[in-house]
Image 1 (cartoon, rainbow, N blue to C red):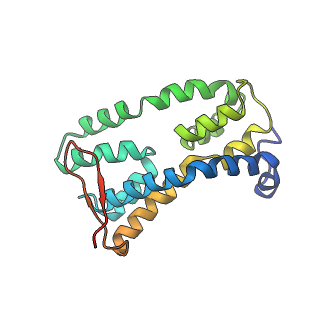
Image 2 (tube, rainbow, N blue to C red):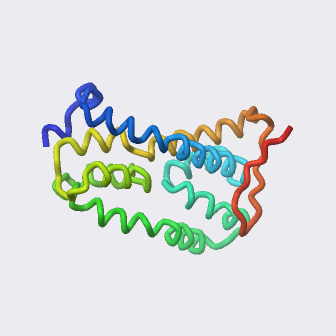
Length: 187
């Protein structure tokens, strides 16, 4: 447990922290692009920038955020929005069952931190690195640097800032109901 709660400088120097950074670098561009699209879509929706920032911090999944936008814009009941987001994100239930053997030894507050910062791609890179589902001291530093949530959340907020500043090549988002969001780069 001492290894787990080590201070940030010790964590940053850990070899597994650096390895997690290297392995996540390959997927960071894709996560950032998805986060940017979600951020611009939300900032250009009827939510407004302030609520879009709140949504990016509360609703972890970019897919859930984008799926809820047309429903919120059309005035759908809140239970329909919640049900949609839950259905879109059921994969996280499966992931959490897979994560359990790795983190069961941690106190609840740290398991909640892990749950918040867990996503599809960091799950896959983590399990590829640690195929044996048992706790090990090197897993925490690897996970800390491998967290896709930090990348996606930063990119989503960045998308909102870009949209609010309106300086991304005069980009606009077209998010018609019942269709995917498309990023149109205007000339």
